[in-house]
Length: 365
Image (cartoon, rainbow, N blue to C red; front, side, top):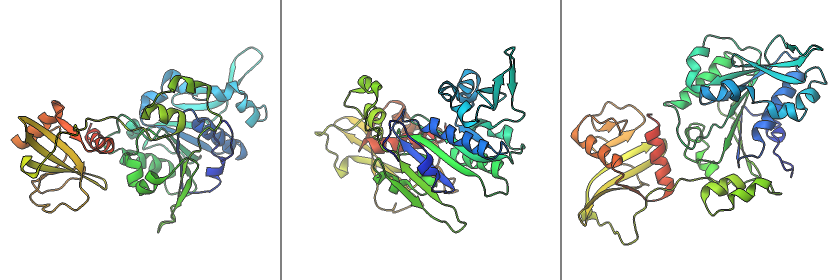
């Protein structure tokens, strides 16, 4: 990637992988560059091809948010430049974007077919029966969430891809994300979690090909070496500020035990486990100094008794000791565990462990 003020997806897309993933600091220009790449693809195809713009929530594609998606490209003259003066603006209607221009009387003249379709993961059921054979490029923007994912979001994402590609293999997928949470379902499901954790800004890693020929390119965008004028507002020593100005991974702050609070084996009255993708978290309920708290920490060894230990997981399991949603208990033990979350009597080994547990809880919301 060139040392410019703004990011370009050109080098990443030139790798010609099935999935291209770009992660990095906010306001680097990832979305802007991806939209430019899509429009150039449409024009180069003689306006026969189109692309999709995907977001998690349908509210991000409604009203003024949908209308404003291409505003920066219009303002900077990109639409007119890429289309060689044929079109100047973008018209948004019914979740689709059309090229348009104004006639001498100021009336809108738009292209016969849309060049971009909008999809939302939470509204995918309404798009399953449609055909999108002209789509050759999918942009999934802000695929990493800091707050909440959909229940079975990975399945919803795959449904979007299935709806678009049908029986084809000529569709490129570009995923764009800010470094707001390492603990996201996409890194785990794509099998790139552990490599992604080790990456530094400016690096690109290739994965595959798989048995079916799938390839993945993961790029951690280089930081803006010139800085941004807006950095003046984020000159703080915090993970959130570092993420905005320098691309560092943002990690939430979770309750930690004070150094003087030592837990001995005799203080642990009950333990249960949370399995979230490849991570195992051990939750020790501790009674000490007239306090009853739960201490969450990583378990680096396998669970010894999977047939009897209380285990929470995102996967269904017929065994009675295996549960799913902690916040929907059906027995007294489960209710006591839920109450400790409600009363915030939970402490974490690290902020990263807190992220894993919170993403597990949000999985069921």
